[in-house]
Amino acid sequence: MLKKIKHLTQPLFYSLISLLALSSCQTTNNTSKNTYEILRSTVSVNFAPDGRLWRLIPTKQAVYVDYSNDNGKSYSKPIAINSLKQKISAWPENPPAIEISPSGRIHVLYYADEQQKSTSFFSYSADNGKTFSTPTLISDHAQTAMHYMDKMLIDKNDNTYLFWHDTRHNHLDKEQAAGTLSLYYSIKTPSYDSAFSNQLLSNGVCSCCRTATAFDADNKPVILARMVYDDGIRDHALIRMNEDNSWLPPHRVTYDNWQVEACPEHGPALAIDNQNRAHLTWFTLGNTRHGIFYAQTDDFGKTLSSPISLGDDNHLPSHPDVITLNQRVVIVWKEFDGEQTSLHIKESFNRGESWTDKSAVFTSKSKNSHPKLITNNTDIFLSWTSQDKGHQIVKL
Image (cartoon, rainbow, N blue to C red; front, side):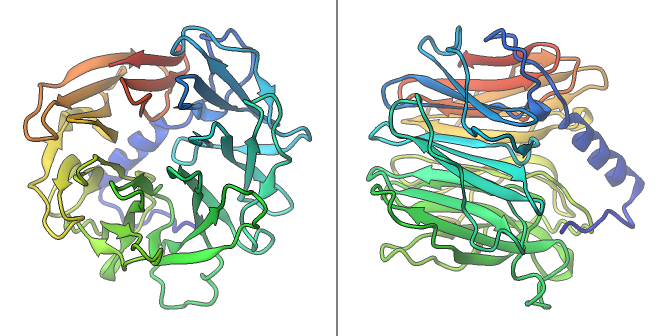
């Protein structure tokens, strides 16, 4: 599925190895006092419309869910989503997902190894998390093709959009570049009677970089994906859904010209405000620029602001995330100084026109996860898990 690293320059090799080493860990949570061995720090959290914080905890044989009514200070007793044991699989670039619909239904996506590897399951709760439906496969090619790196969005009408990386076309389309696969999607209606109708969204997607998803101001999904172009160039494109629910072709928005025969495992982030300004963050080691960057567009990539460099290049800046709430935009990223990992944030209070200086939020001398920003539509929160301090969440 993934093309092995070869013919890398020495600086690039050590940069990639350092970044990948930081992303793998096992830890226990010190907030809810549980004894579960969390797979590689891949805790996922999200707010429900009523303000309750829901948390997804993958372990070796089960995925658990619990909740907090005090923004993460304390949690309920976790319950298992899968009643039958499964070999759960998760890593920071491929965490499970939890979303709560406007009607209060709790939706879960997670990844497990079945008869063949790389199988994604969907489950939901219609009784406020007391019980969950029997997990079902989302791919109709689960026995013959890998599918992973799932993303989920739920619109204002309770329609659920699922997106995933899929290898089913790899043996058919010989023109696909090395290290690429297809992006598939399915739409689940509020009735929940419909099956998962698998539909091709795009070919040429980087096989090891997670896509970013968001709704625009018109309640249509938008995707930011790392694509593989001619000569192995890995840059990013925006993909939008039309009013008639068809998809526009991928529109390239970055021109860093990163040519690499490797697995970056470094997907982008995307947030769109209520005036359709899209905020993008990404990582690159291209000929044009190196590091992590932020840019914005008011026309979905036809024009793009000049990229702003984030972080200290001497401290391996990585894995930025971005979120917007009204006029406010927040960016978070990781840095590593050789001894400890630190999370840094920058904020804008005018839709990204100007920014505060960066400030440190969390630090850890152990292995840790990617930072994640979430909102309850009133405040913005930062979620992070590390081996030494467990799962932490803080209001910014």
